Length: 189
Image 1: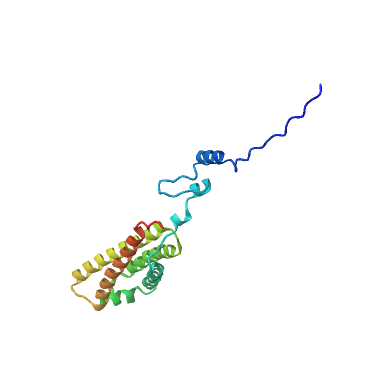
Image 2: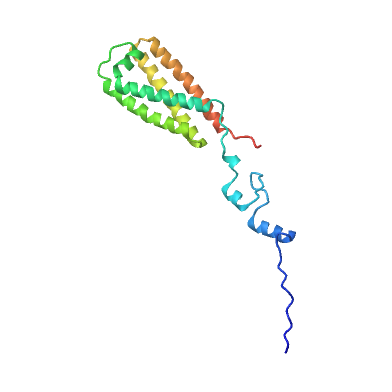
């Protein structure tokens, strides 16, 4: 028996077969729109997401404000740690009694907050920046309340205390405005 040679095998090229390509893409789940209305070209982009979606559009001057805040917190903390008497005299215009220890503890707390500010300056994550701004606004709000109560109890108002209170109100407004600007949803491009 003579064996007949088989005809050559035809290899199917799925990249040229449009129906096969469509079925493959449907099985992989690419090419269609997702919940956000974005069309993914590959499964990798679908899993990893679109990098444009994660980029933060920062408000103008945000990084400058974070830098100013970090430097300000660090400088005041170091002043409170090293020169507690002078810091107290500058704000309240009266002699320091037994509060040297408490002002140094205040400086230590400020130094810890300054580390948060420096971290917020160097991060690109929107959530961390927003928490940094909220921490700053809460600090300034609490400091405003404590300073106002202390001034009412003492009955005397110095120029340094008025400057401190008015600057705290300004800092609260700036921090909260950046906080809300970062919280808004960006418009789709």
